[in-house]
Amino acid sequence: MTKLPRRIALIAALTLSGCGSPVEENPDQALPPVMATPGPSATAESASPDVSPAELTPEAERGEKGARNALISFARAIELRETDQAFGLLSPHAKETWSGGKFASLFEGLQDITVAVPGGQMEGAAGTSYYTSQATVTASDADGRPVRLEGPIVLSRVNDVPGSTAEQRRWSIRSIDLTQTH
Image (cartoon, rainbow, N blue to C red; front, side, top):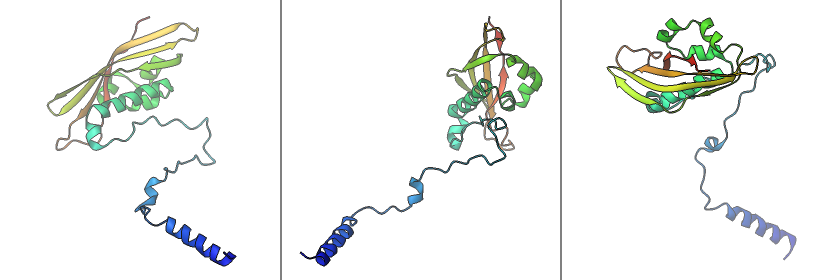
C-alpha cells in the first residue's frame, strides 16, 4: 500500500469510528459550573464565608429538609463566629428576645466552637409549620475550660397562604433557649 491509500484508509477509519455515537443535545449541561473568584479588592481577611442555606426545590424547602437546611446554616455560622449571619436567621419574634449584642455576647470569648443540632420533629398548625430540635454548643473559654450550652431550638415558617410574604415563608429560628450546663 502506498502512502496516499493508507492516509485515505486512516481518515475513513477515523470518520467511521464516530458513526453511531450518540450526539449530545446540550453539551453545556455536562460542564462543571464556573466558580466565581473574588476580585482584586477582596481579601481573605475581609471576606466572610456565606453560610446562607443552600437552595432547595420549592417542595423540599417547605418541609423538614428546608428546616434542617436553615438550622445547619445557623449552626455553621456560630461555629465560624459569623454571629451577624446567625442572628440574621432569627425570626422577628426571636429578635424581640435577643438583641444583636446580647446574642453575640453569648459566644464572645469562646474558642473551638462546635454546634450539634440533631434531627428534630416537624409539626404543623393553622397556617404555620414548626421544627423543633435540641442544640448543644461545646467550646472552651479563654482559660481553656470546657463550656457547654444546651437547649431547645424551634424554627418556623408560614405555610403558603394568601397574603404571606416571601420572608414569612422562609424557615427562621423562632426561639432558642441556650443555658450553660457547666
